[in-house]
Length: 301
Ligand code: COD
Image 1 (tube, helix red, strand yellow):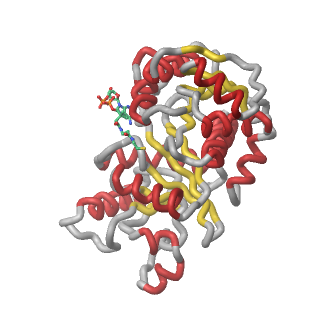
Image 2 (cartoon, protein in one colour):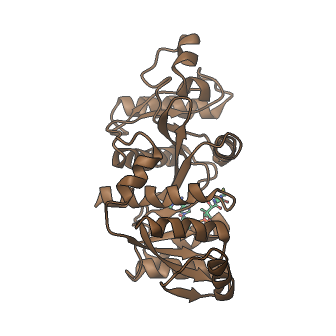
């Protein structure tokens, strides 16, 4: 099992570079992350976007790029070209550059590229908890807006597959809510209780699920003990299931932007994962996300 993100980068270095189709690549943070990823032998990028802008940034960064640049006239076109390359087998992985999450997700979902496999796609984020000194996954803070119970099952299944690819054999899943007791006035607590029972009865496999749990007692053993919570997951969660996109986005931004924790994200469930980060994410987070996607792809082969 990987102990931190540096170990994931080291693992990603061990396999030949993957061809990465980068949509809307003309951005200093994106290109710097690609420069670092290429220096480490992780990927061979194909840059898609406004040619002049891409070339300017490459020059500013002293990035001696000798791969392919595909000129496009809009972000929407860049997203579609990235998916076309994947569909045609000319690239291994797509990556979101400087364009909206919605634009790249819509391209990935478009029927004509055949990347959906009849399953739900969801965002899985890996975060290194500095205080606890361990990795944890969080889902879905950016794709599915207000998932219902069935969608939450699929979101959990996706995160469990990613967790298992990272060496968590039977990950512990905490469906998060504001309280630890079921309260019919808080729908997230009802879903959490049902998901826990579904896992107990084998309807969700390869995971131990127990909730509702609040964030503190999902992560911290002391907080769980202090509140007297008797649970196989409390204080030791490997996967945090957030109730909706707002909760997940706010949790991500608080941990990664304001607390500076290390992170990496991908969209999982399609034929290949999508390397995805917030446009304002640090270069390091983008590099981490490339390494994570690479390791997940290699482990699932
Ligand atoms: N997985 C698989 N198929 C899906 C999914 C999914 N998660 N979402 C939609 N589909 C399928 C539908 O079944 C349908 O066949 C087709 O895709 C279009 O569905 P719509 O019309 O409901 O979806 P869109 O294209 O309007 O929206 C899909 C998005 C993923 C773009 C939408 O859910 C969205 O905007 N999510 C939030 C993205 C965002 O703004 N994130 C910001 C946080 S950083």
